[in-house]
Length: 551
Ligand code: DON
Image (cartoon, rainbow, N blue to C red):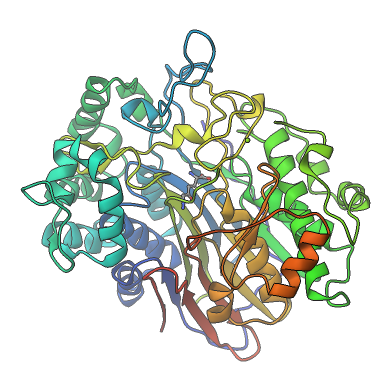
């Protein structure tokens, strides 16, 4: 049984004075429109969250889907109730600590990323059912309708999807159903604008519209999923699927510069690392220092927060974690005392762990309705198209989220992240995540924020939070160039334009190793609401092709 729903009251209710509008920001316009359609049909933010997630499963299959999972941070305005739906994938019941190691104890190359053995038991379909039943106003038949339509009638190939198909073509070719959907009859990358139709996925969604979670976790769909996975060397059972449950968890809540920060709790590391970094920064007057020093301090805070992630965090149902300590002001004061204003601390001077990061895929959306209900949802299949396997007759792509476990303590995963025994594999355990759906609330306004980007997600949300509290608007927040330090490797990565030449030389003189990344990171989706004016803005990251809609 999942634990009873935790009750967390938001600081204040804002409905009162100013009537405001609903908004959706997501990584693809057709998904944002699916959310808008729910508002038009009398639905609330939670119905819109189902419609947006389901539409993303169809039109952004690189990033999330029914075969994946994620975290939904919810705020209900009528009573201030806040909760996090943990719809993270779980390890199959037959999973074990060393399942991706050879006899000598070394990681088997790509074992945790390629093929059905890399797939965890999906959580996203259970979240649709849970959201609709506990929080929504509309039945799944209505909230899944836009996704079913898009799957059946098709949607046009866009540039980012075409690039992802090109990148993953080999993998998709291994799976006949995936090849049929995403490649041409000759096995080529489809042309821009050609229609992608997914009739099997439409049928799976329809089974959910009729039967709720059972339409996915039971019956014909479950049987097809398990047969495909097992034929490909995986270990799923019907019982694994039938026993999957969404777990409601209390979000992590903290304060920074007068703002109330509400974020994802374990098994995501996002909120812990966000609060850890902000608590460290709270002891500095970032406005009083020059820009190079400010960036140095932010980098040092990121490094220490990511180190704590690696050392301490895992699934709270399996490991004991010093969470209260990690997010306490006293702990932050200790961390801060090791930061010098003019010198980088090498990561190997921090007690910890022994590691080339890549950002692949995942997606985030933000929703606010006219009552003030809100959702920050970050959902994923882990890497582009997950494993690239589409289970026969289901239209469902398998995730490779098992790679988010620490396959072997200290061995980096696809994002270069390391972990300890806390994040070792165990039956039914949920792997540690970096997904950081968050609400940042001040007496004057609110921001709903999140992004994909693997290990970069946390630093993006840290920078977005600092930007918002500095008064930046939604469009500028999603655009702002980013920099990142994840403890190991001991390097500051930055996007073009994130560091001025003078800042680069100052940071190098302090001992930072700097590397300009050659790709764009993240796909941030932000909604802001100004309480006094009632102004609502929704912005989608210009690095992607998403859309923010306000109405
Ligand atoms: O949960 C996690 O941290 C990863 N599975 C997220 C993957 C991701 O963001 C890939 N995105 N670009």
